[in-house]
Image 1 (cartoon, rainbow, N blue to C red):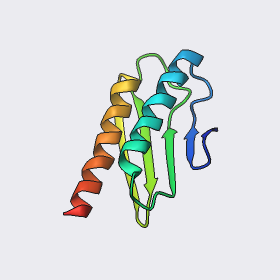
Image 2: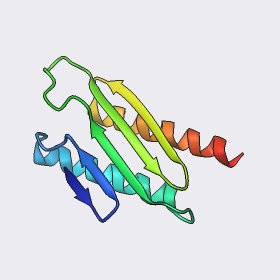
Image 3: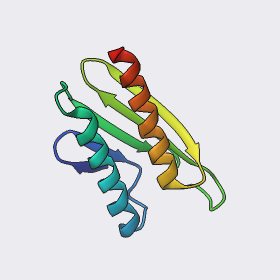
Amino acid sequence: MVLLGGNIELIGFEKLRNNELVVIKKMVGSFVKSVSEGKNFKKCCLTLLNPDRADKEMYKLQLMFEFDTIYIAAVEDTNLYFGLDNVCKSIERQLEKQLQ
């Protein structure tokens, strides 16, 4: 497990190359900052569900965000970064629906 600050966890990313992990950390950190401002943010947990995947397998990602309510999204994608972007957008849509 990789911790970013005190309330962001990355699980299953230990086997990624260092340059990939740096990009993931930046993307997650920026996303958390953008959606948590002014809200009662408690925790974020991004999990790579298949860290031992074969070359042609899809990346399986799950993102859990905890405010006063828990939001969970999951995606599968052949590209790790597109998958991360899509799972973040899914959480954003859930938050927008909640605010309406």
